[in-house]
Amino acid sequence: MYVFPKISLRPEVENYLKESFLNEEVVSASSQQEAERNFETLLLRLSHPPLFTTVRVNTHLGSVEHVRGLLLEELQKQFGGSSIPVLQHPALPDVLLIPMTGPRGIGIRMTEPIYLSPSFDNVLSGYIFLQNLPSTVVAHVLDPQPGEKILDLCAAPGGKTTHIAALMRDQGEVIALDKILTKVTKLKQNASLLGLHSIRAFCFDATKALKLEVMDGVDGAPPFLPESFDRILLDAPCSGLGQRPNMACTWTLKEVTSYQPLQRKLLNVAVRLLKPGGVLVYSTCTVTLAENEEQVAWALRTFPCLQLQPQEPQIGGEGMLGAGLSLEQLKQLQRFDPCVVPLESMDTNSLGDARREDVIWLANKDCIGFFIAKFLKCQSTERKVSRK
Image 1 (cartoon, rainbow, N blue to C red):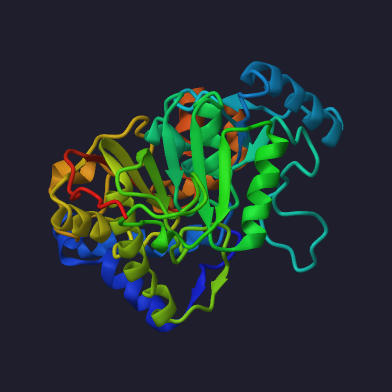
Image 2 (cartoon, rainbow, N blue to C red):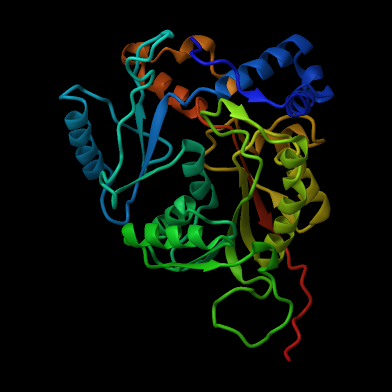
């Protein structure tokens, strides 16, 4: 059952979202009634937390099984010896899932938390990193390899950056950019805490990360020459309308729609900094069509050198209709849409009797709203750089 009312949005923002989720392609593929029901379910889901806490294991310092054992011991301490399940995700081997438990219903006076979730303050700080499940998928989709040079364009606070470095076994170079100094400082602290030495973080505006000619400067520091990187992650600044729990958003329509031009600037920089044969992953934590599928359609029109690629692992659903992408292209995207979970699945008390595969399915679906696209750069688009 639903405990909280649906997310409170400004009327113009809710209407804007509704127009996207009830666009002509969506309604034609289902029905007006079903599209409206899915949209209302989404608004309700956004005000509730996901049913699972997702923990990424820092495999650079310990095995998943060892860390899982340590985590089980900690949970038993926190919950007075109660048995709390910790499941290893079958498609994300470095991810552990902890279901939340709690009483059902609403009381006039709060006497206990509606949701019970373990505290991770200073718990196994070098071994685990709290991340929403779709965020852990991103680095696996990027598929970084040891020895590569990788760019994380908008990196802070560093969850995906450190994940990339861990998947590379800390061999190679991960350049991380963010324009807010305090966030870069936090990113460096996280890298140090997790024992990762391949990360170099810079306080720098990613929209200015491309330089077109050789010039004097700090070796290896931004800006960078075209086609300098094997793989690039653009986890773009976005409206964040997929975050959960979020009971109210006071942003104006102007604010919500302000991100698309910035994302396109960043995509332009990313494509030019990527080597031919390199991989670009674009992701957001929002649900808007304009910041997700429309950006993919724009990128494919604007950069003929890009080809959309299938993703592994494929955990989210396919992309949403309405941006003019083909059905085949939509299948190559990942959209994590909380509204796909049936209403009765909100009851965590029944999880103990559920089959393991059903629990994993629920964890995959009942998460934040998120979007991932993967591109391959097939050929160079750069002229030779003049040397001055």
